[in-house]
Image (tube, rainbow, N blue to C red; front, side, top):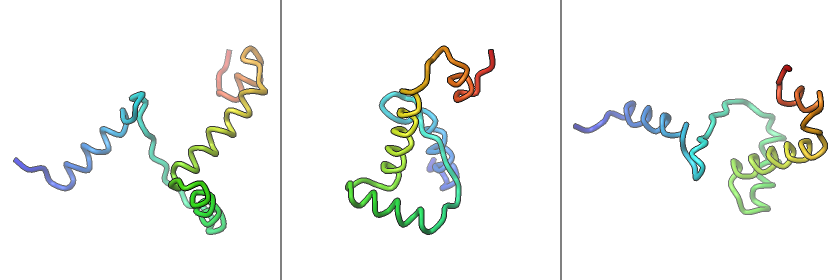
Length: 86
């Protein structure tokens, strides 16, 4: 029996939780950004020939990596950054 559109969409969303090569999944972001930010993101994505999603992912991961390089894993700053309490 064929699935309804709603059933197909529900199945797709369920698969997203384990999507990707590492099966770590995808997370959905739902937000509004300023027109300025959206246009800047579009320009950056166009410049690097990637999607806006890929550009945003690159920027976030690189910013996070830069912070992590400066933090000592045994420090209180590390725990604060990861929201860990000892």
